[in-house]
Image (cartoon, rainbow over all chains, first blue to last red):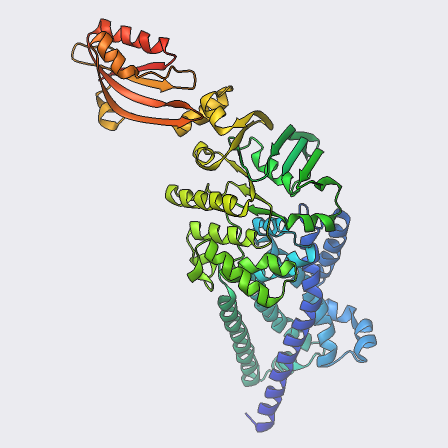
Length: 217
Length: 343
C-alpha cells in the first residue's frame, strides 16, 4: 500500500472519529433533555402531562422511522443553511446528530424507567423539587445505564457515518465506497473494514469500562 | 402533632373508582409513637402517604404541626415535607452515593454549606451507630445498616415527625429489635413524633403508645396499646393479638396427637387468657380442687395495661370426669379453652 494511501486512510479514520463523537455529543445535547422530558411527563411521574408526552413521543417516532440515508438527503436544505455546505464532515454531522437524537431520547427514557420508583418517592418525601429529582436522583442513578446507551449510540453512529460516506460525508465510509464498491480494491476495502471494526471494539470496551466504574448497584 | 380529619382517598381505574381510605380520622399527640396495623391491601400504605401528601387525599384535611398541608402550594409543600421525615420498607437509598453522601442528600436540597454538612452528617452517623461506614456504598451494607442510613438521612433535616412505612418488614427479628430500639431512642431523645404502619403486632407491642387497626380503608378500632391488648373489641384486633401470641404444638406432640380420647392418652388443652379472664392462680386451684396435674408444654404470656393475656398449651393428668370439671372451671373464669386432642 502506498504512503499516500496510508495517509488517506489515516485521514479517513480521523474524520470518522470526529463525525461519530461530535454528532454523538450533539445528539446527546438534544436527546438527553428530550428523554428526561419523555420520562417526567409519563403517567404517574412528577410532571405527568399526557398531551405533551404524546406530542414529543410522536415527533421522536417520526424521526426514528426515517431511514438514515434518506434523512441525509431530505435534510440537505437545512444542513446547507446551517453549515453552508452539504458535503464533507461538517455537513454530515448535522443529519447524524438529528438522526441520533430521537434514538438517544428513547434510550435515556428507558434508562430512567429502570430507576426504582421508591427513590423518586423518597426524594419527594424529603422535599426535592422536580429539577432536583432529575439531577440528584434520576441521572446519577441511571448513569451506568446511560453510559451503556452512549456506547450503543456511538457504535450506531460509526455505521451511520460510513453510510453517509456514500453520499459525500467523507471518512472511512467514503474511502470504502470509492475504492471498494467503485474501484474494487480488495486491500483498501478490507483495511477500511478492519479500522471500522477496531473503532467499534474500542468504543464498546471503553463504554463497558466506564459503566463498570460508576456502577455501585 | 399529626391530625388527619375525615380522609377519603379514591383511585380511579378507567371507569371504576376504588376507595382506598374512607373517612379516616386520627390524631397523634406530640412525642408519641402511633402505630397503624392492618393486613396487606387494607390501605395502610395509602394512609401514611396521605400524611406527607405523596398521595393527595380525595377529601379531608391533613394537619401536621399546625399547618394544613392541603392548602399549601407545591413549593410550600416541598418545604413542609423537609420537616416530615419518612423511612421505607426497602430503604430507598441512592446506590450511586456513599453512606455519607446519602445522609448529605437532604441537606444538599436546602443548599446547606459544605462544612456544616460535614459536621452534621458525622454526628448523625454516630447517632445511628455507623461511624465506620462513611465511604461505603449501600450495596455493601446489611439490611439493618441500610435502614440506619435511611434514618440518619431523614433526621438530617431536623424533622418533627417521622413516618415509618413498614420500616422493619424486610428485616430479620434481631435486626428488627435493634431498629425499633433506635426509633424509640430517637423518639425519646429528640422528641420526634412517630407514625408507623405495620402488619406485625410485635412492632406495636414493642414501641407504640397508641394503635389503630385498619381494615378495608377504615379505622375499625383505636386506643392506647394496653387498652387494645387487654380489651380488643373487633375480631381483627383479636386476630392480630393472637398472631403475636401464636403457639405451635411441638412436633413430637403433634405426632402422638389423636382426636378421640383413649385410655392411655391425656387431653392437650390450649388456654387463652384475654383481658376478660379472671386474674387468679388457676393452675394450682385446679390442681387442688380436682386432683389434676398440669404439665405446661409451652406458654406465651404477656402483661399490658394491668392485665395478663396470652396462650398456654397444657397436658392434663387426671380422670376424665375431673378433666371435664377442670375445663368447666376454666370457662367460668373466662379463659378460652380448646381441646386440641389427646396425647
